[in-house]
Image (cartoon, rainbow over all chains, first blue to last red; front, side, top):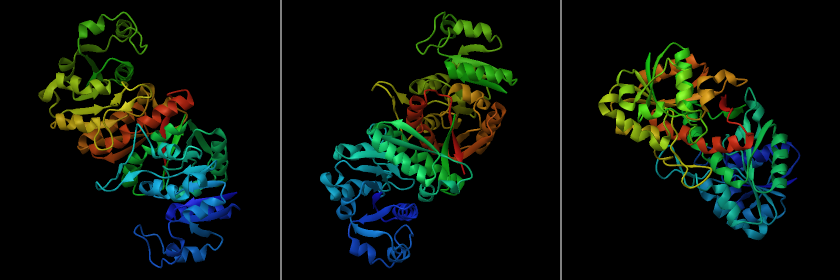
Length: 225
Length: 225
């Protein structure tokens, strides 16, 4: 499939490489493609310089947000949660019309210190904000409570965890579920409509505490039943 | 051990029966013991009449909140989250002084319709509110994200899930962990101080959606790592 990934951080890069490996046609979207491609230094989170990554992944095209999304069937939101609405606005209503928008982002607020709090929660969610702002897009929330490596390579854990899908459009959830299965996810629970993203976004506070207690982000929630 | 359980709903009853089975000395605390013992009708949640339950569980003593807690080494808060501060206030500062307070409650607000929202979240938690109100009590948050039956009988699931402890007092967490192991819990993660209860209380929104999606409360989160 033709897939656009918005965001060039670790989530965007990890999913881009994995999707290429699976045979998909991938374009990475960023605010300023020229500036991103020119980056010769590690970013603030310690990711390797983008230029080096791009050189090692020549099958991935890099474009501005709107150009990246223009030919895509699926648009993956892998931007920081606090920047997601702006990135999607640059694609625009028409650019997202009818498309599956797979939202992976968490609306984290680092401005109050660590651990971050949630910018929106419990009575709303980033997934819903995106769906409201772009009503003709078909938003599906998923994978936001696993680290990038485990989004793309769930087999790196000793046993299968659970991932969730939330969205209003059954066909879009089916498309996303198929993609998750290609990644290797085996236990996928459909929680219901996009309002159920409130629950999965609110997994972040315990996820952050588990990261601290376990000393690694290499874990996932499995729903034992 | 001498254990007081505040609250006579399904959580209080289930834990009382289990603790008696394990050889502990259990007193159930309620606002008005005479009134509770006189109840001949099912409660609003469909629990069997308390009088019938008490007749079937003659080893459990029922007292007012303060009396129940007075001789106890551990006080278990099994009241509704919206009523917990009031119940604990009836025990009082002196009544809780130095005691392990195992807080199982979720601060759910049903006044806005279903699913309930959280009365406090993300920047505070019920566990912290209790610890602040009773600074000489040793509050440990645990088990709030499993249904009553699985709190007491984790073996009823086909494989072991994970439970969490949050609290400021290492000795109190050790006492609670030992109790959890007696129940049968095998995977217990110490998340850190009582502020980590924010994370486990915020599991409730996804727990409620999972209950709806799976059609049963008989599930638990397992942290695969």
